[in-house]
Length: 297
Image (cartoon, rainbow, N blue to C red):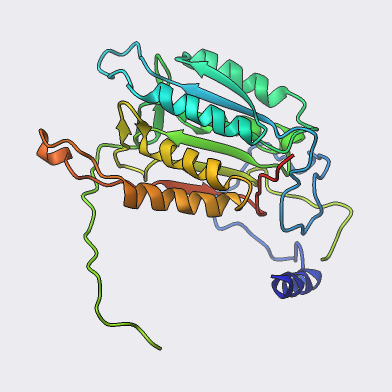
């Protein structure tokens, strides 16, 4: 690891930033507002390998838990309260300040997120938002209407929320992303065996850096929830956070969450053959620029 960092720093020290001739791979001219004059205090050294998780506070975690909906075609999400309670307990043990929001209308969600983005996060390591709801490709349901996730996380980009610039912004989404099913593939055991630090006083970052969005399933596919034990994804996430939350970095934890969902769960609906013995795999989108570890406080 040390050799890797030394080699990386050596390359960085010789890098040419902003050479003449750089141009965008796009048609036309972007005439939207430019944010290059926005500045914020750096929370960690430029080439630090890990995020600074030693602030006074871990940060706020908001859980939007949706059980019932005004649209009567959407069934009540039995088991979601188990998810919300288990996730809340896990996050509290990791020193998050947890706020539970039950069956919020979209306006209430928007107001809550806007208020969260305007808070002073100077003494916090990060923020976390979890949404437990129905969903479809490209949207998630509030109690009253569907909305796009970018209307939530866009409040926390570095230009709009400078107090969180350079800090992790974490989103966990338990919701369907479509109605496609994954029947899985059976793997057979094989009998044969195979053989054979540079520092700078200031630097700029993209406004969308340091986000992580973990979805319970991949785009277009169904997401499963047990009516008594909770969703497969949140069950697995809570298991990993409880067992290894302070041991591994977050992406390693989420790799094992994917493993648990993929290997330990299979739908049990024998009365409906098309839904029976189906599988699921979470999907993680990361713009993190460093390792994230929930060091004990």
